[in-house]
Length: 223
Image (cartoon, rainbow, N blue to C red; front, side, top):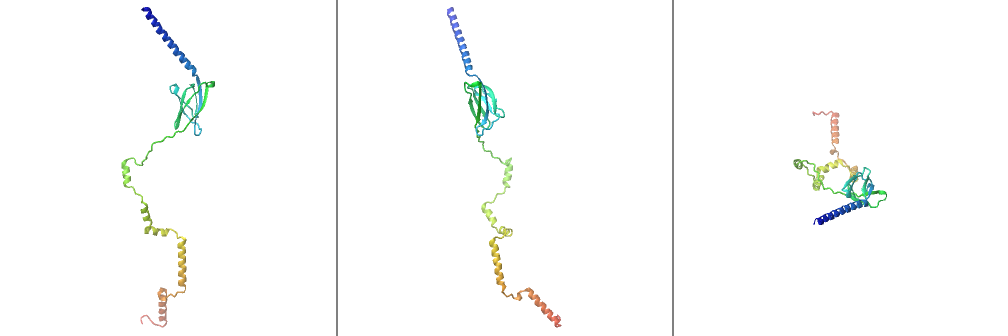
C-alpha cells in the first residue's frame, strides 16, 4: 500500500514538472516569435499633410503603455512585432496601426495620417441680462419698433411731406413746369393794361400832383 502511494506521488510530481517545462517553453517560444522593433515615424493630418504635434501613441498590446510624439509629430520607441498601437489627438479620429512581423533590420518606419473629426457642440444661448429682474426692467421700458403700416403712415403725414419739400431738391419735371408757368405769365402780361387805380404808387403820385398844383395857385389848406 505504501509503495502504491509513493508511486502515485512521484507520478503527480512528474506531471507538474512536465507542465512547468511546457509552459516555460511555450512562453520562450512566444517571446522568440515577437522580437523587439524600433518603431519610428511621424504623425500627419490626412487632409493637408501638416504635422500634428504631441499626438498620443498607446500600445494596446503592452498594457496600454503610452508614448508621445514631439512638437514636430516625430516619435520613436521600442515595441514588439504584431503590437497594436492607437494614435489619438484632439480634433482627429483615432486610428490603429499593427507592426508587421519579420521586420527587416529590426526597425519599422511609418507615416501615420489622422483624419479630422467634426464635433457638434450643443447650442448655447447667450442673454445680456444677469438676472430676471434686469430682464423684466428692460422689457417694461423697451420701445417696440414700428411695423410697416405705422412707418408708411408717418412718412405720408403732412408734417413729413412739408419737411421733405424744403429739404429735397426739385426734379426736372418740377423745374420745367415752373419755367413754363413763368413764360406763360410773361406772355399774358406783356400787352395787358394795368389800371393805375390799382397801383398804390400811382395814387401817391396823383396826390402829390394835386398838392403841388394847389400850392402853385396860392390855395392854402385852410381854404
